[in-house]
Image 1 (tube, rainbow over the protein chains, first blue to last red):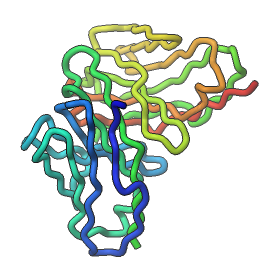
Image 2: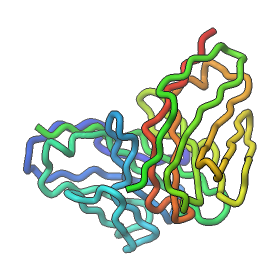
Image 3: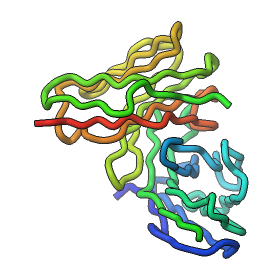
Length: 116
Length: 113
């Protein structure tokens, strides 16, 4: 089944404790991105990656890191989480960056992170 | 920065009626627009997209209209069904694709039997 998976789905942690949220897709997609979703603010893009070893900042990259060492995986790293990073996080993937013909973007199920 | 907004936070419709969800965008340079559906507890689902060189695009039971003059986007759902109940987001981009995608806050569609 074609899908985007995220782990963990729920995480409660404390300020300053490094964590990684994994994202994996099995569709051989080149383009992947991370979003956070907060009430009243909608989805905001954190980072995106157009291919292996190619990443770039979205609108809210502060406090986050990403890596893209393999096509299928795009982990989100919080080196020193803070309470303002409490949010619902979504990973997404698509074949390309959407600049050509319609290129459906697939989202993962989400990771709810609470930083105390 | 530029943002995408929605006129109505909640829309209630009767099953079988047509639904229209509206969205205003502020960046006149935006050239790519997408509608997403998000059901409770799930990730967003791509519904339909439209580029700035088009005024209208149709999918299965859905139509997106783009009015660049007033910077307005709408999603029309024909014969609304209970399964259409969800939050709908519009999103805009000036990159022509998913880079720097900016989302609206969302409109909740409630379908009543």
